[in-house]
Amino acid sequence: MDFDREFLTGTVTVLILSLLSEREMYGYEILQEAERRSAREFQLKEGTLYPALHNLEQSGLLKAAWRAGESGPRRKYYSLTAKGRRHAQSKRRQFETLSALMRTILGGSNG
Amino acid sequence: MDERQLVTDLIEQIVRDARLPGRAAREQLREELQSHFAAVGSSPQTLRDAVRRFGDPSGLTQAFRYVYRWNYVVLYLLKIAVSVIVSAAVALVIQLLVNLRLEVQAEVWRLAPGFSKAAVISVGVVLGLVTAWEGVRRPFDARRAMVALVSYAVVWASVALWGGGAMGVFGPATVLVAIGYLCSRLGLRPRRLLLTFAAFASAIYGIHQIVNISVPPAQALVTSAVLLAVWASTVVILSQFDHAFGHLFCVSERGSI
Image (tube, rainbow over all chains, first blue to last red; front, side, top):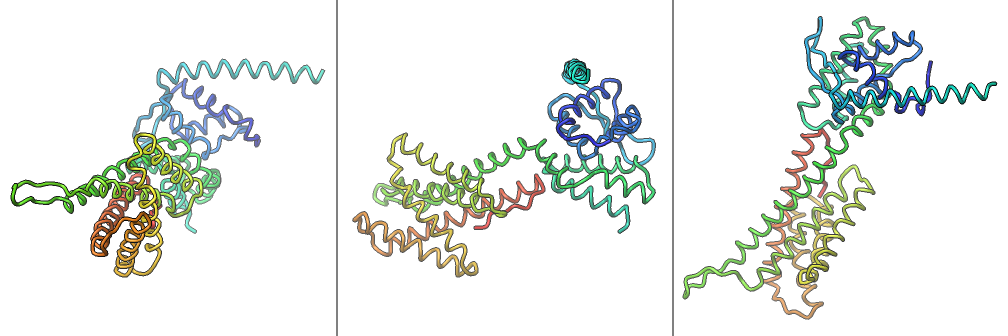
């Protein structure tokens, strides 16, 4: 499913930080994991993911480490810093509260 | 086109245009993107789909530029500041060498009476030339040109507020830079230098006539030659800093004076 950009702005950060709070991942792995969990309904674009990862790394929320892949070139694995972990928790709480509120509001308008 | 070549071209375009600070950062981005495509698979259809999923490369490079914008801006401003300092220092050394006089009887070295004014006008020319260099840089950007002009005005306004003694140099320095810039648009280098030399000499003579100060034509020629040396050294310094900056960010923007 395609989503409007305005819906995605901000949620990409929550998504990346939440996935990385479970374990370290490389870029393609994050895309695959997001697709798998959404049963392929949500496709995070590479053009959005990589600048977002670099932005979070520049902001000190992520750190990166290069490791050898199973085959082929080295992979850049991203993981949360301590600051990133606090930020992830805060963002996730905000997102869940907002989602719950939106569901309540939209559900109310249907009834 | 071969799919692997398509992937290589896409990666190179992103790495080239993303304005990442330094060769190491660009190399890491290249490796990260290569590992992405290696993880995707190797069949032609898979690679084609993967390239399509990246979307418009220019949108992606704009996003990277936004991420690293402050590195770019800070180092750009640093480049300008350092090039002004180095150019002004070289200009002062040129004026120092030209104005140093040996008083034979006293056996001491002294600076000629006109040194301080000559030094100030040289620094003025350097400031004006840097402004023109950044303002008309190709590809032309009206916003950058405006920032350059406003910065130039602010520097001179600060000089006026501080003491004003050097403020009288603003007009002549600006006129000389305008003349030098116009001459740089004309002809090949040897002819251009001669033309700039003659135009500087005429302007120096003319400006002194306007303010009722008598300047012998020979002195106007000598002053012109010195200012041409200041001009040429500044152009060389600005070119070198541009080259280093372009190398750092993989950009091909160049001053065009």
